[in-house]
Every structure is written in structure tokens, then in C-alpha cells.
Length: 253
Ligand SMILES: [Zn+2]
Image (cartoon, protein in one colour):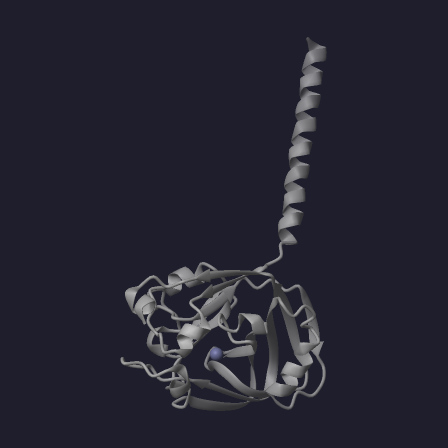
């Protein structure tokens, strides 16, 4: 009987140690998790046409990512998301937290987990210099790339657009009404994506950056920037999840 008891205890110890090993293995695997899915809410081509009403709420969008960019129903400002916080930048220069009930006719978000980090160590005189520098990291040009770039920027030019009323003008007309903001020596983060040409109906082909300052007082769609030395992170995305608004205003536009 004693022998059996020893055997059972030994078996129990063995089983417990097995379970522990499996758990540890899982923990290691999850820490290595890659983020591969870009969640796209409505598409650029319908936004360009002036389709600015959607039934997709920011509650839904926030559930699908901690990083991203977009806009609001009636084009009420620019959206930037960083570290799980969502901000709305309006033409009066105010930056506020996005409430869950607001809706978006265009937004792109994902959970940012960097695949690699690097330093942008050359003089970036303008946004074209930045695009040229980052292009070396676009090694597979059918994928989607996201970039998180933090620095104290020598100069930064960004914009927001005014809230529209029906009948909506197309996006090109609204951009002509944009308000441009300029700041020098401002610390903050560029939140950006690069989309391949063949997805241009879904999202802007090439680079698209929004900005949020460290103090959260300034945000918007980036028009230009200059800086010397920035820390950058890249996250390569190989899946695209598209959510199509189901409201009649969107569907019948
Ligand atoms: Zn934008």
C-alpha cells in the first residue's frame, strides 16, 4: 500500500511539473505574439466621394486596436490613437478624448507590437525625406506597414478639417477648408501606416501620418515635419479585416 502511495505521489508531482511546463511554454509563446491584423472601418474611396455617415462606433473601433488613425462622422476632425488612448483634434486646435458613442466613416486601427526598432539618424528636412528614409523598411511591397516614430520635432505642420453639413462636399473640397497648425520644438509621436498601391481604394496608398504631442495638447493629420534623430518602431501587418457600415446613409450614398 505504501508503495502505491509513493507511486501516486510521484505521479502527481510529475503531472504537476508537466502542467507547469506547459503553462510556462504558453507564457513564452504569448510574449512572442505578433500583431498581424489591420482593422479597417469603411474605406477611403467612399470617404473621398463624401460618404461621411457611418454606424460604426468608437466603442467598436477601440475594441480592435490601441494604435491608429481616422476621422469622425461629418468629418468632425482628425483621430489619432496611441497606447490605447483615442484623441479627436478639431479645427479650433482642441484635442479631446474620443467618447465611445462617436462614429467613424473611416478609421484604421490595430494592436501595435513592434517587429523591430530603429533610429532615424539622418537629418529629415521634410516629410518627403522621412518617406524616403522609411522606404528602405518597406521590403515586401504587398504588405501593410505601421510606424511609430517618437522625437522632439524641430518643426511640425499638421491640419484638421471642419465638421460638414449635408449635402456633403467631396473630400477634396473639404481639404481646401482645412486649418493648418505649425509648431516648433514639439515632442510627440507620429502614428502612421504605409499601404500598398493595390489597396488604394481601401486606404491611402503610400505613407499617412497623424501626430499626437507628448502633452496631448496638439494633434492632427501631418503635412510636414523636420527632425534630426528619432526612435522608430515598425509593425508589419499581413491580414486585413474590413468592417462595412450597415446604415442606410452609407449604403445608399
Ligand atoms: Zn489623415
